[in-house]
Image (cartoon, rainbow, N blue to C red; front, side, top):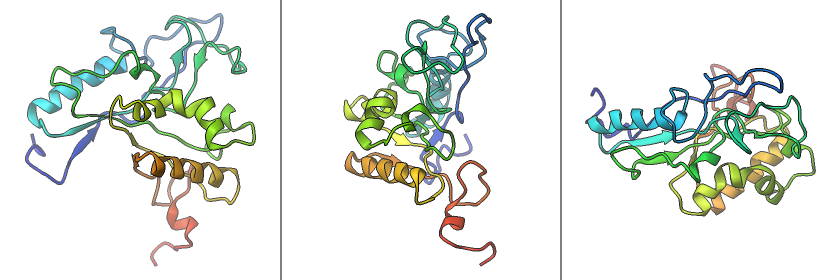
Amino acid sequence: DKYSNDDTLIGFDLKNEPHGKRGYSGSTCPTDIAKWDESTDENNWKYAAEKCADSILAVNPHALIMIEGIEQYPKEDWGTPDIFNAPPEQSTWYGAWWGGNLRGVKEHPVSPKAGKSQIVYSPHDYGPSVYAQTWFDKDFTEQTLLDDYWYDTWAYINAENIGPELIGEWGGHMDGKENQKWMTLLRDYMINHHINHTFWCLNTNSGDTGGLWDDLGFQQGS
């Protein structure tokens, strides 16, 4: 209500980084971590996002609704336990960054009652300085990143015109090494495919990524 007539506020990111991993082999799969299917379970992020989107759009029908991804998506079904530190060919789940996995959109797009025209999918994506994901194990290129992670996790949404996309978080240390290489590849991919983004971050208070003020040589207070 407060912002319904404020044209400087154009959208709402519903929740930061829905995530969670399934229980490892031999343990019980938790039911309180983010999943993505057609159920009305309270931990179904798709269902929760649709309810929240309808509530917002009932008050502000012109707002954009940013939908982040989840962390894991099953290769078989949601009841399958994970395997601890499994190599990719043995894993029972497709992994991703927190808020990064939008595989579910292909079969289960977010469809609020108000319609999908306001929905913007917004994955988070990071480089090896945040965590050494398996897709960084090789001398990675744009094509290997697409093959191993980007395309089926989030890039297909834009490439196949399924919906608008905004990379809600990306960034990291400009280290002149692998992380900066990843940043350059993602930057160029977004430019070439007309994908918008918001960079994390400008300030210097992120332990995971540092900040541009540090990388560009600015000193606090200057």
